[in-house]
Length: 108
Image 1: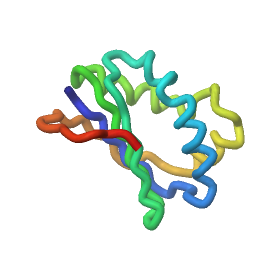
Image 2: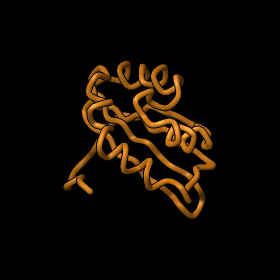
Image 3: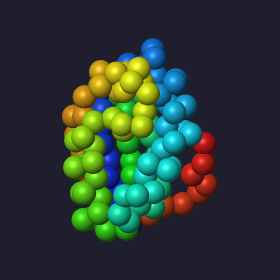
Image 4: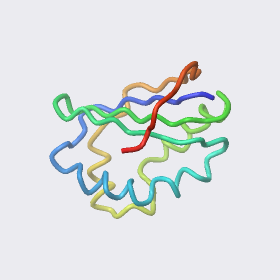
């Protein structure tokens, strides 16, 4: 399994809650069409206005293909006001990592 880890900076943490709620409701459906998708997690650092998006995929190639999707911007299905909140942040790094260990319950 491979993880695509992307860091976003200058996140609008003051207005983040409706964005998080939208992704909680619709994110899994959006990700289902991604080749080799296995799961995902989003980490928010409110203090430093940073977010890490972690997507899990069956192969490194499938994980790399997600960059093309992410380069298109926020999902078109997302309400415009939430898209604007997302666009305030910038993706500063994305990398592919082999998952060599995982465990525990990973639910929020």
